[in-house]
Amino acid sequence: MESTIALREWAVAVRALETGRQVIVLRKGGIAEETREFRLESPKFYLFPSFEHQRPNLVIPEASGAVEETQAEAALTPGFVTVTSFAEVAEELEVTDAETLKRLEGLHIWTEDYAEERLKWKKTKPLHVLVLRVYRLDEPQTIPLREEYGGCKSWIQLQDLNVSSMTPVLDDEQFRRQSEIVGKRIHR
Picture 1 (cartoon, rainbow, N blue to C red):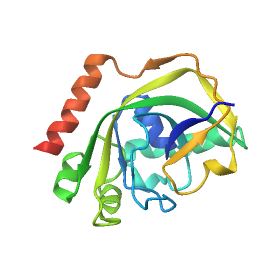
Picture 2: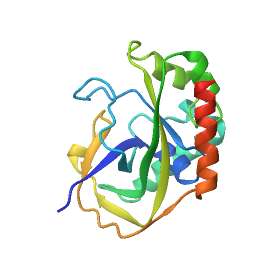
Picture 3: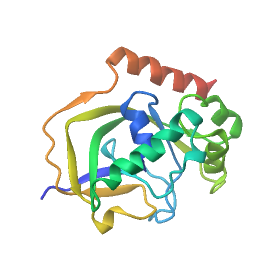
Picture 4: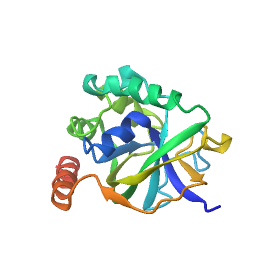
């Protein structure tokens, strides 16, 4: 069996990335991180949909219905998880203040309060903004949900994947425009 790295991310955020609704994720690190902070372990990885902490009240109203949808879809295959996307990091940026974070509003699905809560957690550490080029797997991979995939950590090693092809969510020009907007809002 081949082992492959994946970033654990809320299923609702994975959906937003897969639809082109957003091209960023906000990371601070999980409670169970070995380094106690977020560290980019690979510039390319699968997106592993997680459900532990996602709640409708932590995302903007237009995304709240997707929280229940993703949970209902996962309930159809208990003991398994379906991996549907792959990402490449185009840029890793850091945010250290609420004013800069507020400028990212509208570029992600998290509420302003939740995003700010993430920024304030471990105050001395920056909030990492990963600009991701996302690809949908042409054949989604439903794999056993192993115990080691759980917990409050960012990175996991997946097994049982057999991926042959994938398609970019956004074309080159769409992605360039979206990532340029992110950069301009952070570096303003």
